[in-house]
Image 1 (cartoon, helix red, strand yellow):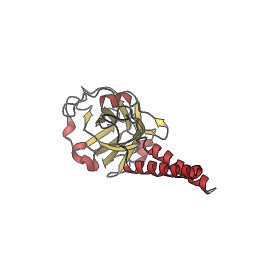
Image 2 (cartoon, one colour; image 1 turned 90 degrees about the vertical axis):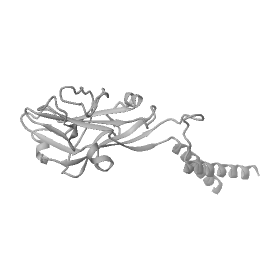
Image 3 (tube, rainbow, N blue to C red; image 1 turned 120 degrees about the vertical axis):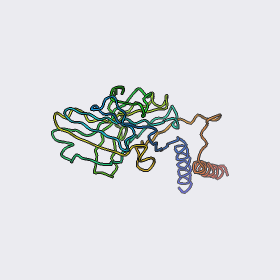
Image 4 (cartoon, helix red, strand yellow; image 1 turned 45 degrees about the vertical axis):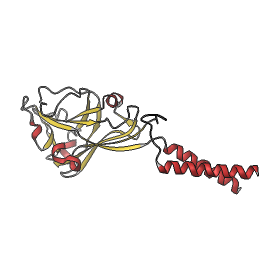
Length: 242
């Protein structure tokens, strides 16, 4: 009985070692550029403002744009979790403002055109957007709030194209408020930096390319698990043969 337990334990160590070698990764990316545009000043560039603004009323809109560099992530990665986090600088809207008469939370959409530049972006020259990525539920000022793009089986982001061109562009906006207003302000990349600036948390897996240039080197813990498991199996085999 003891031999069978030892064999099963050794097999488990080998399986865990191989599973660890599946290259599960977590990474935090900080916005490489961001900007906001204002429908009331369609030809101006307010990107020098220390904060980003997402605002909507019956006759005015402010949208905030974000861009993230994905070049550190393999093109073949499969992203299991993606979360955009913003640090609020102010929130002039109350909890009832966000939900009455209906959902007026900031919504974040995918932007296909990555050629925009924060220093020249205006309301007039801004690009369009396509799929909805996630919704932000803002808290009070000086707190983090999150929009989940991919999490727990919900996948709003088709990341393949963005991984291939190494850039992800996002726009945050509040839709038609039907005469009501809602406003959210967050720290920008220039003001918040890596402390309070916009960030994207990712979890992903990818295929090991195998031997050769660019191959992933197994971590010491993975090698140790595999080694212990194999030694255990060899020892068991010798006992059986003896």
